[in-house]
Image (cartoon, rainbow, N blue to C red; front, side, top):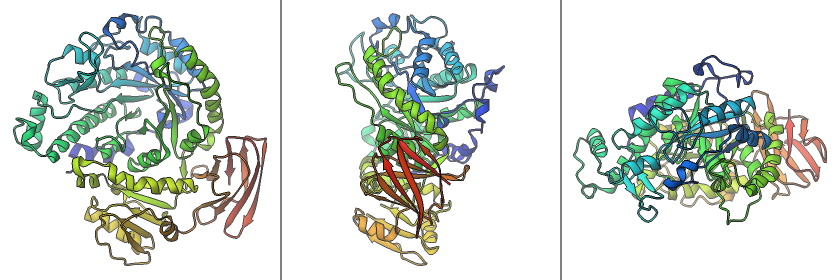
Length: 589
C-alpha cells in the first residue's frame, strides 16, 4: 500500500503551512478576518474544552440547549481557571450550528451568534479560541438520512425518535462537502486561532453509492458485496476513506488561511487510521494521554507539540479524581500541552457551564495548576527532551499483521520507552520517513521490526552504523550485516535493559535515588537547558557533558522552599537538591 500523491505533496509542504507570528501580534485589532494573527494550540500550554456534545441528546431537549448560554460567563470561567486556549464548538455532534450559517441550521434555543460572541469575549481576555466541527457523529444528519445505506446506526444505542448513535460513511454523497462548507464558514468569517475536527471514523463494509464510486476510482473494479474481497482490500479502502478526509480538510484550510493550526482526533496508536496522514496536521492530539503515547505521536508525526488530554469524562455518579500533578508535569516536559475537558457530561444544557461540583474542581484543582504552568511557560516554549536513544517506527510494518493491526508492533516499543522514561532517559521516536535527517544525536537506534522499511530507509540505517551509531534490531528483522564504526545486535526479544544500556552507554542524566524522576530539556533558541524535577524531596542529579554542557544554575522555580548546589564533576555537572518545595525546575546555562 502506498501513500497517495496528494498526501505526499502535502507532506512536503506541511512544514511551510504554519506561518511564524510573534507574540506581540496575538489578539491585536484587525480589519478583516483574514488579517487576524492566530495564536495556535502549539503556543497554548493551558487548554480547555467547553465540550457539551453529550448533553441534551434527545431531540425534545434541543430547544433548551444554549438558551441561557452567556459568552461572558464562559470566558470568565476560562480566565479564572488560567486557561490560555479553549475549543469553541461551531458544529457539535448535535449537528446544529452555533455560528451564522447558510449551509446549516442554528440551534433553535440559541440567541444571536453565540460562536462569534464567545470568540470575542475570549480574545478580550487574551485566550485563544479554537473552532470545532464534528466530522462524524453528526446526529442531525443521521436522523434526517436514517434508512439511507450510508447511515449505519447502532440499534442497541439508538431509540426511535430519541437518542441516536452510530456512524456515517465518509464517502456518503455530499457529506464531506457539507463538513468542508461548515469549515469554510468558520475560517472565512471568524478570527479562530485553530481548527479541529472530531471523530475521524467511517462506517466499514458500506456499499452506498459514494463507496461504489470511490472503489471504482481506486481499484477499477465494481463494488458489489464486501464478501467478494479479502481482508486486505477491506482495510485498504477504509484507510483510503479516512485519509481522503484528512487530505481534503487540510487542503481547504491551507487554501483559506495557512496560519491557522489544524488537528484531528483518532490519529493515535490504538485507532485504525493511517498515522502518516497525521503528519499533514500542525499538532498531534493525544486524547487519552499517557507519556508513552505522547512521545510516540510527537516523534511519529514529527511535531513540536502534542495536545495532551489528561482529564476526560466524569459523570455525576462518579467520584471526582484529583489532578495528578506529576503526570501533567511529565507531559509538559515531554512536549505536551495540557488539555482538560474533565466533567463534560455534567455541563448545564441551558448555560453550558459546568455543574457546581465541577466548578469547585476547576477552582480547587485545575486553576492552581494552570497558574503554576503560566509561571513556568518561558521554560517550556520550544523545549525538546534530551534523548540518546531513538526508536524507529514505520507505519508500513502494520501491513504485515492481520487486519493491519498495529498493536503487536506498538507493544514491542512501549515497555522499552516506559523503562527508559522511568530512569529519566526519555526516548525519541523516529518515523522511517525521517531517517534521511541527521541521526548522530543518538547513541543507539532500536528497530523493533524492519519488515516495513524500504531499501532506501535501510540504507540510512546502514549509514548510521557506518558512521559510528549502534543499532539494535529485533523481531522479524531482515539480515543486517554490521559494517562500520558502530555495532549491530539482533535480538528476538528486545526487553533487555542490560543490552540496551550497554549499546547506548551512560544516559544524559543520572539520578540518585534512582526512583526519583527528572527530565532534561534543551531550549536551543535561548541556548539553555531546563531540568524538570518531577518528584519531591532530596536527590542528586549528574548531567553528562557530552549531552549537555551547562556550567551554572541561572534560575530556580519556585524561588524559595528548596535549595540546590551545582558543582563540576568529572563527566559534567553535579547538582545536589534538598528541601520540600513542589513543582520544581532548574534553568541551566
